[in-house]
Length: 252
Ligand code: ADE
Image (tube, rainbow, N blue to C red; front, side, top):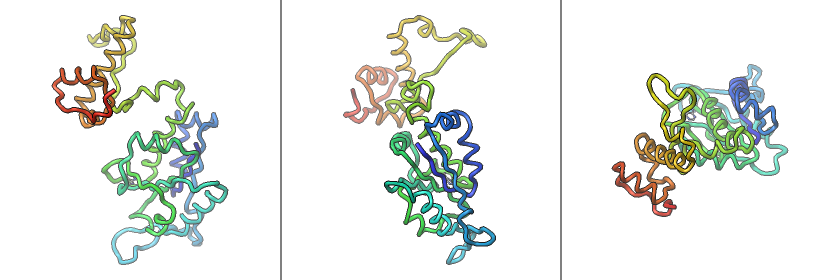
């Protein structure tokens, strides 16, 4: 997977992405990053990339030309038109299913805005997806782009050490993950649940599944509406007082 990021702060992207798991995956050749400084495409002698909004109002607007030139440069050798994600609080809210969809692409372009916004004409020309990371406003698109790139990267085969771990984490079957324990067996008077020490794998799996269901019911009951549940899961949830039914095709 190759990420191209159009930004005024390429160092922020390189630093953020070059650390930890994604940094290691770049060294291993599984991920690649092309952080492009939009300012380098400014034809202005002072390297301006923004100007006052037509019609008046506060703040500055990013101009279309530098972004258009940077985009043309990135895409000149591409075989097909790539997906271009504009990170904006006005977009659809990012979720795991989007990360899964984007992870199937070979290359992705992120466009990070700053100031009051970006000239609408360049957005209309190049953007395929408007995506937000949540209902709050940040100072720029770099952190949201990094959030999405991280979520997408960990789904690229080989990026995580243990291939299983991507599958069994929160949001697998649309459920939250069960709690985890490691040594010591007792910490501040609290013991690790006996079942985890029993070595009985069937019981452990059932316990984890139930914890997962219980946690989802307590913390994110909205997820249960579209969770993939077995009839045993349903019985357990009902024993906890859950009285909704999931979408029927999701019952295994
Ligand atoms: N830019 C500023 N705030 C944002 C958000 N919440 N999501 C995506 N891009 C943004």
